[in-house]
Length: 147
Length: 220
Image (cartoon, rainbow over all chains, first blue to last red; front, side, top):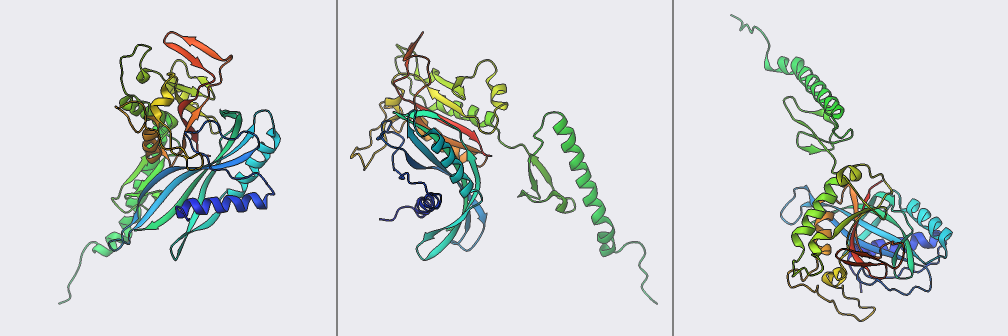
């Protein structure tokens, strides 16, 4: 089942980037309330932390142009004490791949461009998820919606 | 008898005076900014020209308006978040201290001491600022999001005063307000303590518990 077009586009693009960079770690869907994910192998997590939307230009009713600025976090989680070098290298290469990247989200029959405005290193390791330690990157994106 | 016009026509006036007025406005704006920066104002502010954000101020209309707006800082965002967290915090009997009074600011995992504002002003890109609540039941107050994968339903926050939790709603507020200049993240975190637990006046802070946290990073 398709989810939110922007989230779907990000998941697909992340998979493309991981494949291109020969990173075999799976993308695992966890949630913030869960502090004990499976800690046996490294994985990548993508989180959508919301954003804001404001009117960019007036149009006919229902056809106004809205500017959405949002933020997405990509975490590279590894079991404590392992894979540190790969974690650092992977987070850097994924960040560099997303820098100023443009890709499309599909809304019905329309294709709308998502533009990555900022790609920031968020540091690490952060020993926060059970027996896992994470290193993250933050992506600030912009997309124009009609509505 | 020909009509004789003396002095400027309005078109001539526009042609001669418009660039001069613009130049004068730009000069005044630049001087005002330099003076303000010397007094500590943001040296790279957001420029609003004739109501248009990030438009070139050199294109200002005659008698138009140039505004320099300080970029929101880490200090603004963290102080706003703290204020909202305190407002939304439930207040109970307080036998082991109040949740409301136990929001802590950490910079790269270490408690910010002394002048928190000054410490936040000194935060550089790549550093992590956290607001963490270290009350032992803070996690229960926050509740748990549903997980299809684990077949776990959503669990509401423990307090009737804040069923939707405290940190999650404040996180949404902060992202909507400061998301353009900062990354703001909500997470359940473990604290980096030397040893399994630390006893404080109001209870025990354990390294084995998870605590709700808002994390702030500067967008590079």
